[in-house]
Image (cartoon, rainbow, N blue to C red; front, side):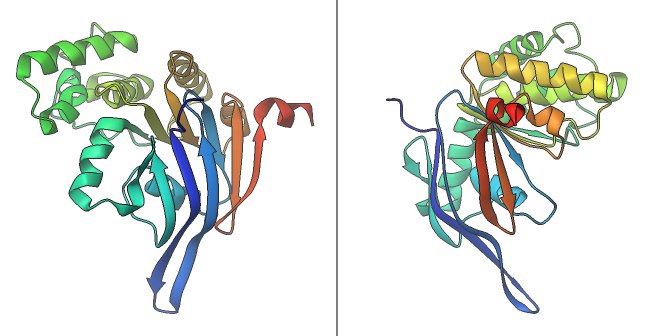
Length: 234
């Protein structure tokens, strides 16, 4: 059996507030196998964003363990976290997070700059990923010259540039109309069929339906974990 991409054991996170310690995440146990497509759902304040930040190595847990492809991330120093994040994880955000003065090619290649990749190789790989998301002819364009849906495709290409084992997508269709959202989710589904594990946060049931599995949080706890097919039959 292949090693889990994600395994959390008793994962917890508390924040210090003026009123004392606030538990944002409470003892979450979750395993995600290679090639799974998982939707994370729950109301505001449920803990899903905190959980995603921990999965993305953007924050560290207060207690518990997080194993990313077998490595205990909870025990790593900040520089080790950054290196692991750049190699293993691709991020897609609601707001695209593209740099407006850079070409699409340079935006996609940006993670390779941090990895000290030679310029010619950066250009070649960036153009390949732009073609992969259907924007091969737009390498020299700026973000302001393309639509919101196309900007999100560029963000997905950037997430793919380091050949990650895992893509974390935080409300990736939140700024898009329904037709464009369908196009973006179809692209995610295609990438998942190519073997990339995807974990996606969404408030929308029709978006979560693209995933094979839906996990729900409430009050910092994981309260439901079911296959999408089972939920659809209910």
